[in-house]
Image (cartoon, rainbow, N blue to C red; front, top):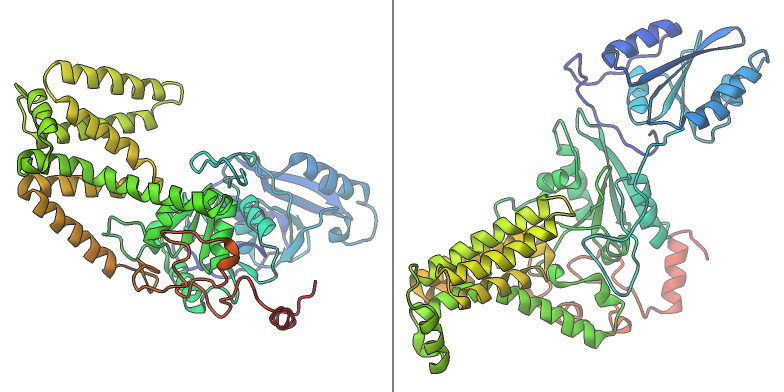
Length: 512
């Protein structure tokens, strides 16, 4: 889609060399034969011949990519009705978005992107008509980021829809979309979104350069782009966030982040990401600050419990029994009497079983998945205890750890690695091993940087006015400044004076 997708030099399927410009021939049949050769005479291309002013006209488009009814009403019928009139072909077609080009390979790109090429005998220009239409999912509620209060719109697989959903929330002339086509074979449309003046220029330039450097055959989902942009691929902590809610993407763009929209993916990437973001939810900003504070700290507590509880249980029951209350110690000892495995192996077995059940519940059809999870949780757990394979205390620890891990969805995979790491250290060295593991994780977190900014920002390095949306969430009217580690020139977001507003509107040549 010309004007929406910025083209790269790419390698053609047949020539195996960098793209070069080749002019359209005045002979229609020659152009059609060449097009068929390049596309290997694929059966999904439609070639429709018409007559206009006594000259041959050929329409080329992909079946299923265009609205055949619109093609008939606004292209074919007008050409047939005015075929004897001495007017230009472009003036006859009743479609708003029409471009022309003399580049043959640009025509191929546009047809592959969903446009209709109109070739006329004797003309060295081809008309590119936008009648793009295909079956797509409508805007529905998000599946993974559910809220009680707040917008319930979710991104879809259409890049045009997703761009419109962001523009719907940020009607500023400073909102910029820069578009790329990445993937030699898939030719996937990718759009970089940011607010000029709010996002740091160095951040925007860095992302642009990385997008231009991507060389691959295919981009199927935003996860592909995430892996190419990730500056810490060996770290277990995510440094690029994702969301399927337009309001979340808009909120992060307004803070100075950039968003990347990928055609075919319902999840939009936002970057850079900081560790504290994993504990923030969209609903935190739509409810009263006090409850948002409680909910956010509950998420942090749930994550800590999910990764530490198995390791603490093994360390306390194996090395530090004196730290347990006497009654609890006797209870645990009585339930473990006659069990064949030590505590670490019990925990390890149940954690592996849980991961298998979780994977089965995700991959199975929706009607069967919940049944597998319920059967696995009830039957296998109860049977394991009755058979004397694991103790009841182990089952409780693993179940609670599993439930707590889902409170922070973006750190589910990270929690998996940390849980097993601390479990091994706790089984080998007790509480000393757990402390060593925690210190190692903190050192790793403090050394991580995401697009030049410390991953623990704004906690470390610490800044008072930047910590109004971390462990606490102050009222919105007190959050007057954007985070310094994100924002560019425009750091003020509320409480500014009328003089400031007037100057900014004048600078942007934008009036109310």
